[in-house]
Image (tube, helix red, strand yellow):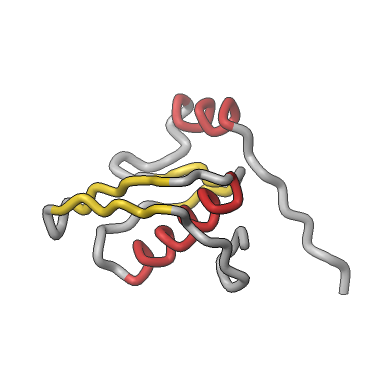
Length: 91
């Protein structure tokens, strides 16, 4: 069986899809490293996975600190010196 080829989207392509109405009204998505990720309510298992993805991206980029506004729990989460994690999508 052959390998599956993954095509990553660019920001201009993503913007064109939004402008063309490709996504249903109210559907929220985020472009992360060329992949479209559906946004889900905070506190869900998927939201936890998205945090792992974002944290691994920040670590890979060498971002020393990032903040997340946790609306559900009404708090600000400050993450300092994110470490690369082998199990995370972007290491």
